[in-house]
Each structure stands twice: as C-alpha cells, then as structure tokens.
Image (tube, rainbow, N blue to C red; front, side, top):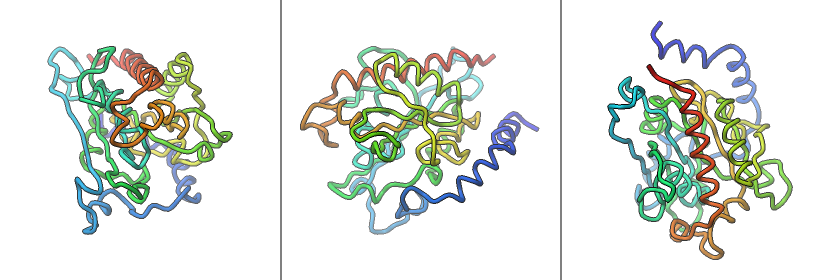
Length: 275
C-alpha cells in the first residue's frame, strides 16, 4: 500500500465511517438549489464572471522546502461561499493566505504566502441560491489543491442562530477533523480577544464529515471556521460592508483575526517536518 492509500484508509476508519453515515441520515440545515458545484456550473442560466466567479493561486515550488521537494503543499486556504454568499469570507481568505484583499499586495505583517481557492457569488442579490454545501463541493481545482495539501483551512459565515449562540453573538466556531489545528486556532483567536467556540452539532457547522472539502487534504483532515454575521460585520467600516467596498475598508478586528489564523497555521506547519 502506498503512502496516499494508507492515509486514505486511515481517514476512513470505522469510527469515521459510522459518524459520516449518521450525519448523512440527519436532516440538512437548508436545501441547496444545486447538488454540487458541477451541477451549478452546468446550469445554462448562470454565467461565470456575472453570476459567480472562481479565484485561486498556486505558488511556485520552493526548492529549499522539503515539503515542496516531496511534491506537497503545506497549507491551502479556501472560501467555498465567498463574495455575496457569506460576506467577508473572500477578503479573509486572501488575507490569511498572505495577500491584502484590496490590491493583492502582501499582508501588512508579512510572512509566508499560502495557496488559496474561492468560489464567489457576484450577483447584486440572491447570492444564497449559489450556496453548495461543503460536503458536496466537487470543484476539480478545489479538490486537487486540497488533496495535495497537508492542511486545509476553510472559511465560512453563519448566523448566530445557526451557530447555536445567543442573538448578536460575535464569535467563530472552530471545526474540522484536525484536532491539533483546531486547538491552535482556538488558542490564537482567544488570545486575540476573539470569542472562539468549539463547533458541534450538524456537519455543515462542525465540519466533521470526511467528505467536507476542508477534510479532503492529504492527511484526510483539516479545519473549518464559521464566523457569525455580527463578527464579520465588525471587521469592516460602518456602511462599507458590501462586496465592492469590504476589501478597502478593513478594521483592526479583521487583521487581528487574520494574524491569529496565520499564527495557528505557522504553529501547525512547525509540527510537520518533511524529511
């Protein structure tokens, strides 16, 4: 059995299979209009660049990095519901990956860059109709990027009610199958003064299905952050929380969140020596 097959086998251990089966049998939070990204892309009524867009970046191989020499990407950051679907997640995806969302220059604090992928709703309204749940994400580029990465961080938005929190809560739910990654994210977000709560309950919020795009990494596990509407709104200047204006109107809370996530990634990568 080769290394990839072994990892895949471990990621589908009996306990996880049983958990996934239970999750599949439970009612969904809300029915998506499209059963997959492929189904959405196949809809002749939708036009890429008008209704939706896709952005991604893979970086040149660093010959000094043992992981790169082994054909591995250490970390990929994704926003499966960016643009007008879950507002603020595109901008956060770019910044956590190391790029300023306003001009794609480097983030103010510097540091490494990470590969990224995002799907964005570009409509003036009704972008929620473009939502495809993360367990059904079959975008070929997204899957390929995640499958070649040791770690995946997926950024999402939710309401306080969906998160099971009190009305108006400014918080982030930390989920996914990578327990170490979850720990580091929780610690760094908390240290930054951001309320971080362990995600539980349904799969879409907790990110605990092996089919979730965040867990389709080389290791079969990743992390998912679900940020409440109120938390994301507080990251941008009043009256500037629109798809066109967010990137140029970030507030200190935005950068505190970004720094916390990037620090957690750095801590995780430091535990993953590739010889």
